[in-house]
Image (tube, rainbow over all chains, first blue to last red; front, side, top):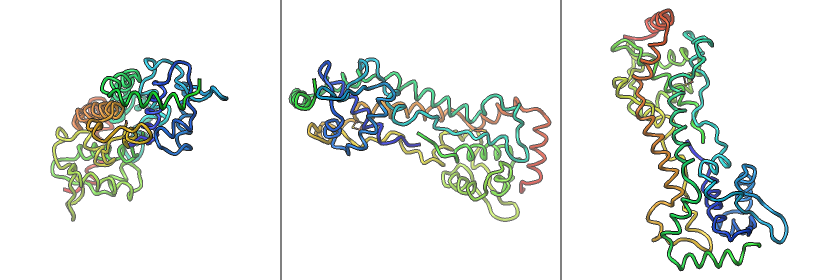
Length: 163
Length: 163
Ligand code: FES
Ligand code: FES
């Protein structure tokens, strides 16, 4: 069971955008440069975040990406689903309805016990991620960041953000 | 995030083996026929279960697969890990250590907050599956099975199992 590498990138991109001054936007190329990742791949993930309504992008001199809502309103499940698709990890092909002792379709109105257990585990996985807000990640990071790092980030954002 | 289809097959194969009379074994070809799946694929998953110590196989006239221990001692996490590998789904490439504002390695002794949240969600997912024993799946199934189905399964096993 593997998630795309893009989930890490997208979550960190959102974390970076959460540090932007009010009203500022950050071009995709700057987000890629900040993380030292290939711009084309990063752009794909930023577009997925935009399609999911997590970020918005504006064109022009004051353009770039910004969060579409407050970091309190964005959680890790939304980011993961935007980039990774959010389909169930466990696939049930109704194998119980095959073979010489196949269950009849009318006996299979409810999910098989095996599928039900996997999907229940996925639900609690998703609930956990849903409870972790971008704001929580950001404030935990800011708390343990030393002031030199904060200044460096601020200066970088001032040099690259559009207002 | 996707699991291999083999997890469903392997879990159902274990469920079938849990219905075998004491001491009996079931050849891989019979397990594949029971589920109407390609024998070569099923064999691969049975070998993964054997490598993980969940089933054992014996050669010869009384050969075939059987559970390596009681269905109370086998859980869905063990089956999933045997077939799907059990690596963490979320991949952290330490993206925070890249780019113009890279964190220093000595600041990264602890997992990044983003990775930590994903891995915590995976832990509770795994704990849930660990709590679901093959014996639970089997007894829930037996409870709701009508007697005609149970007889059909018994007759099929008698015709195909080796003792
Ligand atoms: S029929 Fe799909 S998991 Fe049981
Ligand atoms: S550095 Fe990998 S998730 Fe943050």
